[in-house]
Image (cartoon, rainbow, N blue to C red; front, side):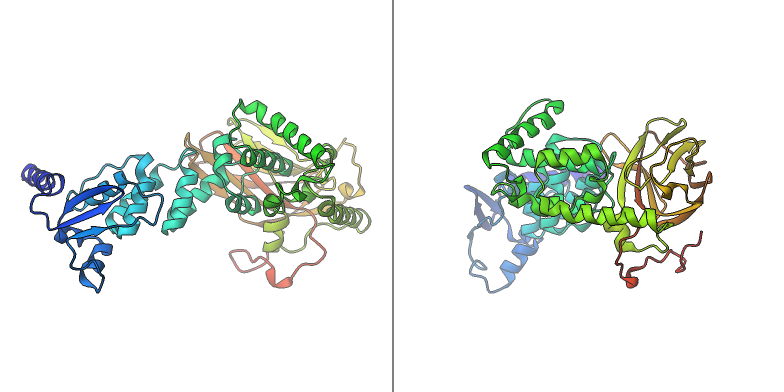
Length: 445
């Protein structure tokens, strides 16, 4: 019975669509003409409205279609018309955007749904940007969300020049501002990535080995600096468009490291007027930490953590003991992150180590933090996630605290570990923005 139904469907498709037998309407578009049937075209919301309303084309036998969308081409229009006669369609990944555009114009809900499912299954570094822009244009919110998450996971981990070329200004601004960005290793790496991205946006024809991208970008920006007589690049005519993106950098966690601060000064991409208040704020924070002996943030404030926390990260390549510490960014906060026996532990231990600040010798310190773990497959999709949410913990000298336990969990290595830390809160914080834990009570430590 199935075979008979399939054979009948094929014969209808061949006779009515391919040969145009008994056609009662002709559609012209993009230099092509299709001999079709009103009863089949009425499956399209676009044509159903046209034939039942007061449109000029309602009673016409030949209709000229104007294509308002540059994504629509003749082949996509042909495939969309064929779907009205033939329910089974194989949509290649490279054609899904054009067919989605056509299905959206013609209001073909089933075809739109098929495109949606294909896009969700085939997000990778070759498709992610085109899918994101298409999902934004044609209202596929869940596909847009998945593409955005892919970019947050992979922008700093895959180092793909092709992705950097395709990410536009608005999208990059949102990515850099997000606290969900997987930063590897510290904020200075975000700046370095932005420098390469800006170079590729301005020089899209650049081709070369990956290791040559940053040196070539540095040479190009140095030449621009000489030609503009030392004007910071973001204040030049070419650079002004990129200002909103670079404003999302968390400069406070770049200038606290001497080699990074020197690179920022030598590159002269960022105007000094941006840096002066940041240096002042960090100096005052240093004085507060040293002279008032602040233990750290007393409450958790969502806006402060999302917009001002330190972003850093690392990679656990294998299931073996490991530890690391991000020095120079935390006013000598003697915090060590350890992975051992499938547990991630925060340890406070500065014994037998020289400490430049008295704050490191305080008997107790507080830190607001969030820890995220993710494993990605070969296409960059997350196959494992774990999130501690934002918390606050207090550590005494030589104390350690387990923050993540991966025992009895199906973990795939390597694992990316992304951290958000806030060691000292900003001076002025709106009390109404205090973050409430899931229990609606403050976290006590």
